[in-house]
Length: 110
Image 1: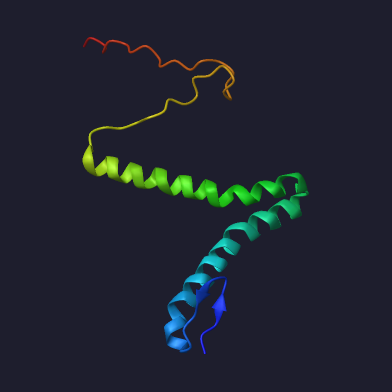
Image 2: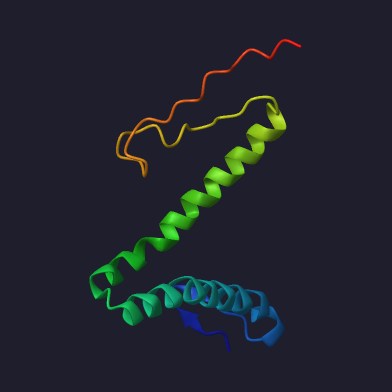
């Protein structure tokens, strides 16, 4: 006899439900593997105020995955193009000053 769960009817045979059950299990364990270490880290370090932010981690990883796929597509379509972000130029960087490349000296005459 089929079981009606939230408007979805399940099949009566075990093998007919196997794929759906495995997909739900994989989703649940993946979500737990994503959030539980972060929650455990917050608890061990005493950062309880950061624990609500753990709920946003799936959204963050979804955006990171999207960025990685877009970068791969860009690499395949335009391999000579490189979107590079300059780092360390702000006055608030670790050195506290702008880093400038040293002036090139002319080669010594022999």
